[in-house]
Amino acid sequence: MILKGKKIVIMGVRNKWSIAWGATQAAYNQGAEVICTCAEDSYEKVKELLQELPGTSLYVCNNVSVDEDIDNCLEEIKKEHGKIDGLLHAIAHANTQDLRNDFINTTRDGYAHAQDVSCYSLIAILRMSKEKEMLNEGASIVAYTYFGSEKAIEGYNVMGVAKAALEASIRYLAVDLGKINCRINAISAGPIKTLSAKGIKDFGSILDVVEQKSPLHRNVTTKEVGDATAFLFSNMSDAITGEVIHVDNGFSIIGT
Image 1 (tube, helix red, strand yellow):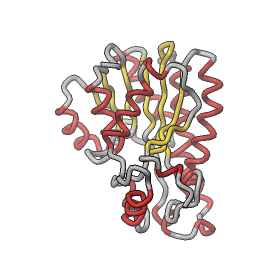
Image 2: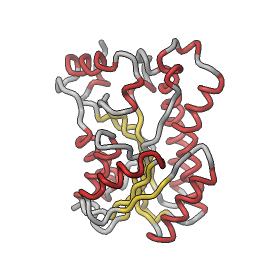
Image 3: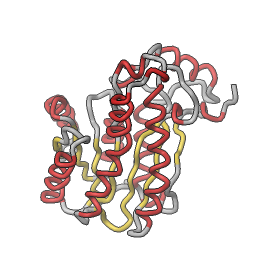
Image 4: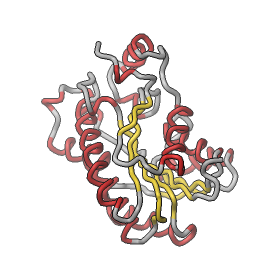
């Protein structure tokens, strides 16, 4: 068990199809004490899910666009669990119309919303965690991103731009967190059928292309992404920071 004795916070669990749920299961199976957060409207559903993993905890972080909501959530976790050894940021959102319309028609408010929730929330969470001295020495942070940050993927639009900002933020955060001997990396997961994916136009065709063209000719699973996340939380990845690691069956290396 590569995470035995570690306390891991998983932020952004929504349901049994979410990638964060795969990470929750992987961390638990690798011996971690798992602490989850979710939005208030997902609380009962996630609470029921966590019954499968005895000993896990659940807290509400309702709106990551509000500093007070983040602060209250982290304060509760610190009060009951003390310092943590890892944190997953699996939080993103964009308005449906800004995903389905041409990118040039993205609204100013929609752009700001996608950046705030999908990118800036990571910075805010880590700043507050550092201020509260919640991060154990050697703590590892992981965030989720997608290939749409690197290439123009039809239907991803403003979220692709937000994920690009997230990846750049991770490089700068790696420098800052390195000063306290903590690490941060991103996993660029291949497309997975999640609740969020329903907002992407013709999402099924993206899955078909990956299956056809990726070197392994299949789509990635939440378990596979979760296992990679557990590795990044573990001491086995101690020399890795500031990286974006593709877990996509090799699709990102293909030129056409």
